[in-house]
Image (tube, rainbow, N blue to C red; front, side):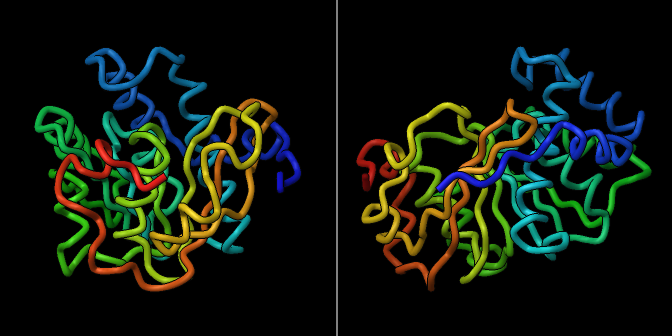
Length: 226
């Protein structure tokens, strides 16, 4: 199932939520090599796509969201700007990137309830204060689908929503098989497209994740479940 394409006008209405202070921080992140080669404005628009998709599913801002492998802060910092009253956690394993994010938040007047957490998802997903505590999980470029699903489900509360960036022209069902996702309590809910440029896979948490998951560091990538 592919959801109706959200027009570029929807993105346009959200851009004012990302003020010049945050744009400056993202430009510094880009210069440090923490973001991809896509122009900053396009990266912001892509991050706003996560906002659109999640608000469409929930009918509101999520109460809590964690961004897997947030890197230089996209989409994590953009989510924080758009949802200042939500709990937003920026998770990454890199010391340099998480320190940059912590410094950015310390100087950013618009920062709300934002936390930076450093570590591997396989380990962080077993912490009581993080395991299945989030209404939403986002992932821009965390890893292969099986890795993203297994690690992301560890943070997602039952009935929560996960949104993963995807190329907009991928064939349905090739990367997110129903049976494979069921092993980590997830169900594929279709692909959303925004401004006819950006694609997002939407996953729904169907129940409590088995205690076996996520497996120890490195195993979800080396031995993917699907």
